[in-house]
Amino acid sequence: MTRSFRTARLIALLLPTVLLAGAWGSQLIGHLYPCEMCHWQRWPHYAAVALAALAFAVPGVPAKRALVFSAAVAIAVSGAIAVFHAGVEYHWWDGITACTSNVSGSGGSAEDMLARIMNAPIIRCDVAQWSLFGISLAGFNALLSLGGAGAILALLFGGRK
Image 1 (tube, rainbow, N blue to C red):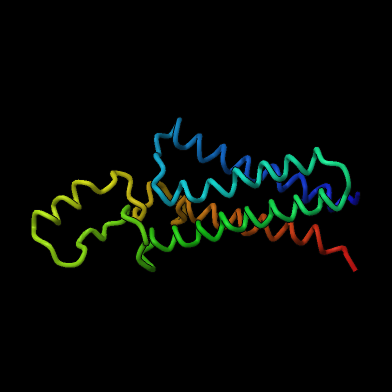
Image 2: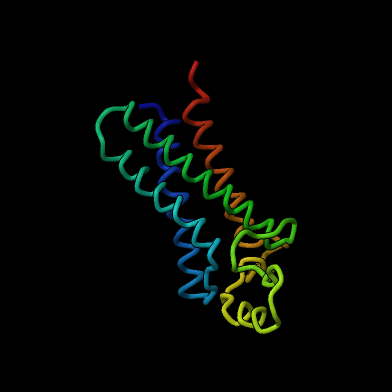
């Protein structure tokens, strides 16, 4: 097992673990409650943690490599979801869920629109609850997840000839 593989395996475990710890810390300590799309970003990270943890337990380098590769793909999926979510927050495109401000729908009475507004979730997907230097939490997840997945894949395949 090469040093670059061991590093890739460690990043594949630590990156999603740290990102999930940050998400849960923001929720439980910082009272930043997740919207629907925030939850979507967490699921691939849960899978990545499980896959990377298995890569420490299973015998055989080929199986370990496959698990680390799969964890990197899961991390990248979370990053892709985060790119979409950040775009919704920055109003680059419309969201696809009911947790955005687009409650007008097509037609209907004023009572229907009021009912849609009253039934809309309190935590909206199109409003960033927190940002730093203009980058929302979804934006940070996109940067870290896609960058981390790229680093893992580079470490896995960069030294192969």
